[in-house]
Length: 136
Image: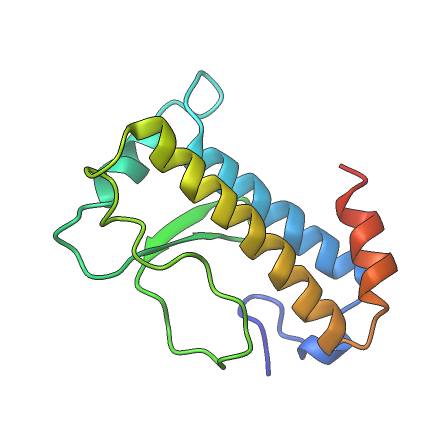
């Protein structure tokens, strides 16, 4: 199983590769969910793309510190996926609650994905990934 952009099977990833992937995806998600001078148009673009009339959408953080909103691809069932259908709740709840909901699920996805990759790579996930991600 290869990861897009890496060109190496998951089983050969090192803890440093997993951590760089985690940090890039995290930065992309922060851009999508944050307003302000650092990311002036990302949030507005994200909110507009979360059209409730579209099919089920997921917010993905990308390793290159970008983000994308798209339908979930067909992936193995064991591979963690972001929260599906975030676009449907956009107009049905207060904006801050909607953002908090997406942020919580995005954070959970990041950690579960990092642990999944670490376990598949044969790393000691409880020490290596935990220590690396909490070093932020």
